[in-house]
Image (cartoon, rainbow, N blue to C red; front, side):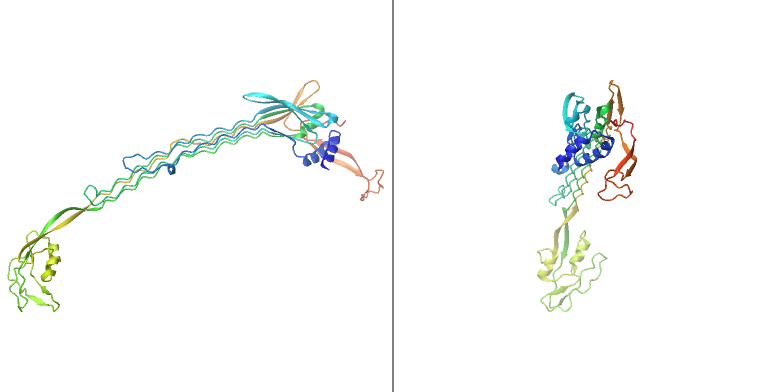
Length: 422
């Protein structure tokens, strides 16, 4: 059915104005474009983004400089479409349209020759290629974290400094889009109906979006200082003979420590009934002794418990000394500097320029007339009646009745002249 309809369209297509307006529209709707010419510009090659910190190991020493992010490698602009100078010729009874001419670009030209049916259409893609987007700079490498100190020595107790981070890489600009192609279609004056078969896309290519500079890496965190043994100090005590446990009242105690000498209070042992006895006012610090430590040791118990709390082995009267560690804290390190972002000035690419589709009608004497679009016929009036041989002329249009359409009036709203009625 489709092939028979095609033959019917081919037979009637070049005949009358009504055919050109209605029949061509129906035929082009039924049959898709049979001939396509791809003259479009290619899109630009995409950029290569800079390597990011994720692809690089973190520096491990504060003396190692963190690496900067890689700069992006730019893409390329969109290519402009090729142009074409094409002639169309109706082959008459053969029902074919001959297409021939030249396709050209900045690097040369080539000849083409094709044919298509009168019910087909010619589509020319002469759009410009899109420009590549801008590249993204790589992110700077992050600095190492400073190590915490350890308590083995004063030097080791200090925290390490964090490492400085690397700077971000530079991004790139978006690339320009390509221009649309310049298409010229040459048609004889008596075959302007062929202009209805041509469609073209001559739009510009879009400029690429701007890239982006890479961000700087994060500076390494500082290490913390820790507590360490900074030295020791000597703490001494006087240990008197412990009084007899059988005495109900002890001998006079020593003069009060830290004050003027005087009579001491009773210093005997008091039986606690649990195998231990309390010993009151029996200790006094020697000159230079640590008062707080002295007070901690003051309320002791007799015997082994007393000696254990005192921290000395001697249980006899006299001077007993012990050594106590002193402590200090190491300094904290400094945090590393954050990296700086890339510094490139970045913008988007510019759009290309639109191309053009131009119809050139050639007179018999070779004179050329240029138009931007084909003729455009619009139906503005007609008459219809049932006066045909198969009608009854009663003004009522009944199913199966033959009708006559006459006085068809059309107007051409375009500059290109419409085909002759003959």
